[in-house]
Amino acid sequence: MKFVYIIFLLIALAMPGYLPAPDLPPGGDSFSLLGKMRDDIIKKDKAQFRVKYYRFKKLLAKYESENNWKEFSRFGFIGKYQFGKSALDATGYGNISLEAFKSDPGSFSEQQQEKAMDILLKINESVMIKSIDRYVGLIFYDSIPITRMGILAAAHLAGPANVKEFLESFGAKNYRDRMGTRISDYLYHFSI
Image (cartoon, rainbow, N blue to C red; front, side, top):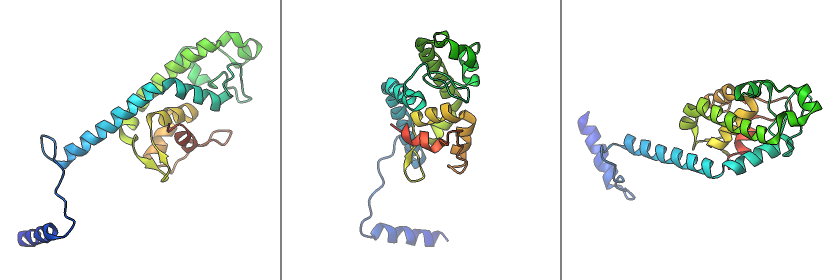
């Protein structure tokens, strides 16, 4: 059996177009090279997220409310980022109700909404970190690059559990909200 492998290797080396393997990092195996490449992709994505953070928030506010901090929906979502009850509870603003906000939008000011969004993004990023590390850099449906920004926007739309389910099913479980917006829509639009 060894003889067959040696012959196969010699034929492969003699074939035109053979290129030697790239220099491998210390440790020398291709898995460490792939691991390093993967680490580089994740670091670059994280750096881009930090640089584009405010642009990302502005785009998210545009999609959620046309950037109107006084907006509310018939489904009970409020503010610039259309916070639901669970998001308000998670960010420490659980005392804000739809009724109170409708009668006095100042009860949840634009500055408070910005602070709540910063908190929510940090929470969602920490909850989604394993998915971010695993899926960033992949492409779904042949057209959706998976990025940290896309994952966090989708988590804001559908919740982290639904986004994890989408990613783990490689897009087969594509949650849709009441307005018909899918996780894949946010992943695509926010892959900036």
